[in-house]
Each structure stands twice: as structure tokens, then as C-alpha cells.
Amino acid sequence: MNQIIAVALGGACGAVVRFLVSSGIYQWLGRGFPYGTLVVNILGSFLIGLLTESLILQRITLALDYRAAILVGFIGAFTTFSTFSLETFYLIEQGNLTRAGMNVLVSVSACLLAVWLGLLCGRALFYYGNGMIAWGDSDIPYALMVINLIGALLIGIVSAILLQKVELTLEYRIIIMVIMIGAYLTLSGLYLLLYLLEHGFSINTNVSMMLSIFVGNGLACIVVIWLGLLIGKQA
Image 1: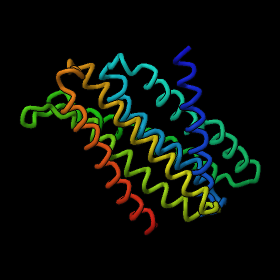
Image 2 (image 1 turned 90 degrees about the vertical axis):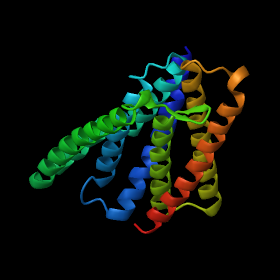
Image 3 (image 1 turned 180 degrees about the vertical axis):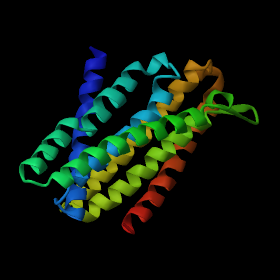
Image 4 (image 1 turned 90 degrees about the horizontal axis):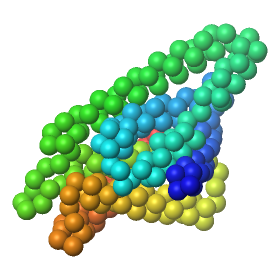
């Protein structure tokens, strides 16, 4: 039952983010081509490839519900094959055979490439020391921290684009940013702690190290989100 609730919560968040991203892309680039669906599918494909390495292949049993919420719930709802199929059919029905063929070709090839790149990035990150590096008397889970920073950069870039393209009041923009950033910082830090617990670290004996990693991850993500916002504003 816990996994069902986790998938439901992740799916709700993924559907909302997909709507915001696709709507922002369509307002930005227009509806002459299904850009919005293409973008969310490519992003989702890259993320599922990257996160499969860290959330499944690393086999962290404590985070089973968490993995289900992200991979099945969030990314499953964020990406959409049915919308891709419907938009392609509409293009065919309207006689835009070239655009329909291009949509199929670009979507399939780009999503496969994105999954492959995501898997390569994940495997490369965990290649050295199983994703851990010694730093003084501590072991730093650098691989997961890098993945968290990649996610933070994407959040910053996408958020900046959406806030410029989607018509929302200032209050709603602030609420969305606070909820999105707060949830990401909390969940990414929580997963780091679960990863450390799974690898034999104890809260009783390693509390200072674990707290430092949690805080350091949060601060680094905030900086990278800010950089993402600056990059997104230039788009």
C-alpha cells in the first residue's frame, strides 16, 4: 500500500509539472509542431536513464517507495506516449505527413538517445568507488550529489522558462517556486541519507558527517538552481 501511495503522489506531481512544461513550451514555440510533448518525453527519457542507475541498480532497499514515486509515478506521468500518438495522428489527418513522420522519427530517436546518455552518465558517476569518495575522515556520496545538481540545474532552467512563458500571477509563481525547490531539496537530501544508511553508516556515530552532507547538498543545489534560473532567463 505504501508503494501505491508513493506512486500516486509522484504521478500527481509529474502530471502537474508535465502540464506546466508543455504549456510553457507551446506558448514559447507555438503549436505548429508538438514541441511540448517532444520536450517532456526527451527530458523524461534522459532522467529515467540517469536515475535507473542510482535508484534501481544501486539497490537501496530503504528507498523502495521513494524509487517507485520517482520512476513509476513522477516520470511515468511526466512523459506521455499517448499524447505523442494522438498528436501524430492529428498531423496525418490534417495532411501534414512530413511533420507527422518527423515527429515519429525525432521522438523515437531522440528519446532512445536520451535514455542511452542518461544510462552512460549514471554508470560513469558510479564507476569510481561505487559512487563514494574519501574526504578526510568522511566518505562523500559524490555520484548522488552530482545527480542532485543535474536535477537542480534542470529545475532552474525549466522554471525560468515557464515563469516567463506561462501566464500566472506573482503569488502563484512564488508558491510554485517555493514548493518545487523546497520539495526537491528535502527529497534529494533524504535520499542521500538513505544511501549512507544503506552503506553501513550509523546516525548515532556519523551524525555530524551526515548532517554536513545534507546541508552541503542543499546549499549546492540552491546555487545551481540559481544558475539554472539565470540560464533559463536567457532562453
